[in-house]
Length: 81
Image (tube, rainbow, N blue to C red; front, side):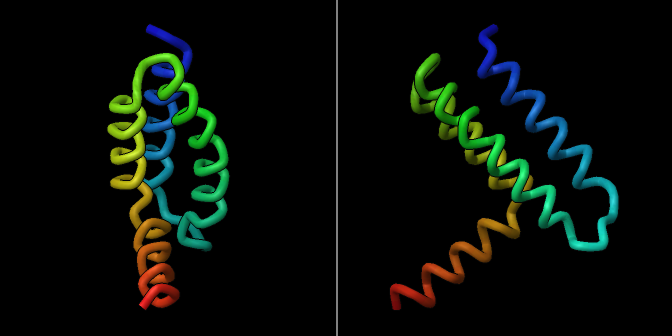
């Protein structure tokens, strides 16, 4: 297994574990940190494996951290139409 694949698995486990516990800011600070860490992991998965690994990882990450994705979708809908 490559470093990017191991990093992706650790990222997913950490995000799932953190999502299990309550937070006063509804996990937004943690979400920003995880997004910043996740971008290089996606790039590494794309370079070392292929785009499908990166897309699957991105989908799993969006499933775990769905509120940033929902807010982004609402913002785009408001801006574009």
